[in-house]
Length: 471
Image 1: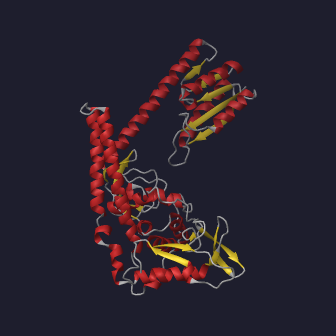
Image 2 (image 1 turned 30 degrees about the vertical axis):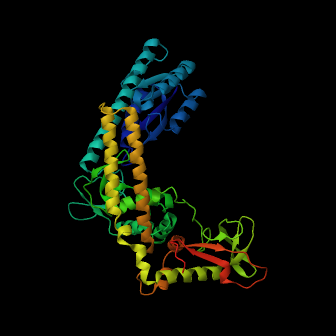
Image 3 (image 1 turned 30 degrees about the horizontal axis):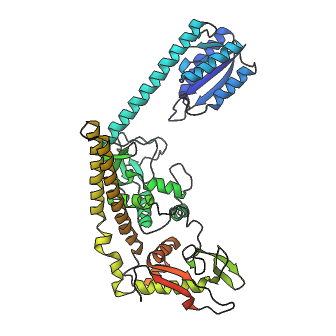
């Protein structure tokens, strides 16, 4: 009789399958004693908690149904199942096909009430052990987080381990900080800092990802960067030396910060802004695509190619088009002229640009107050209606502070341009996303209708200052 030898290891950190090997030796010995022909089904680094599919286990069940397998051998019953509902399905299958179940610790005769009862009891205890293990792990993780300790399954981008001998650890897969020092990675940490600056200055995430890819930087798993991955990296409090648990910051961490908490919170505020148009600028190749408006219908203008060259054109009803190069040149002249004015520094007023720390302190105080409200409610010091009313008021104040912080962060879009010796060259050296952000911050552009065949007329491009100035 052919017997399925089911081998499973939940977590194989090193990928050496040693646990699988030990199970195999014992199970094959049992098959030899019974005179069964073993057929191996092995799943390494796979849990039996029921949350994820086990393809090899599924294949074994299919082979049982086909009649190819008459018995199942496992090192222990919990190698097969840790979820009672799966066990019940297996018992039904065993009853239907007369299946024998043998483990190193003993057999389960699933054809009898006693055997099924024993299997169920073993399943209940396996489930309890799994839940207790999960609870212990979560509690330990929370304790580590509250203590500021580090625990990451693999090396996070921007950091490295330094051994006792002062040599960086080259093993990214097995990244255990025990007995070692966590330090900023000399190359990746700088990329991370530049990315924070770029986001605050208006650059798009996909542009940052493209830059990293061009510079040969890869994710810790060796893949190319994408905008979504850059976003997840930047909003991680780890970069500001903050420890988190369950999505909440629980205190300072023991490793070095790549950026300050203010910078990290500023980027989080920018990326959480509901007005931020995720992916809206992806693929934009021109300064005013999606920014300039059609003077007839009010819809954003796109770009296309005409007989005379690239043009901005109304995508809604093709009402009008205008020379792309000439409109760009005109708008750029206006923007450069504004940035060269003596009062251009007003765009970077200290109370706007540097008051962010105070705003964030006030926001933190409000969030602490909101946590205290929950404690007061749990202690019976507040009624449900009082809790709701107070929470609504605090959330309104937080929304106002978030809006002010976003205004402060947007001022950074002008960094390195205002005060430059050559403003036009400084502007030209910026990424397209950054130049678009500057244009959007300063002016509103509307392209007005003109007669057919007319030469380019700058008066038919209406440019309005967003700060209300008339000159």
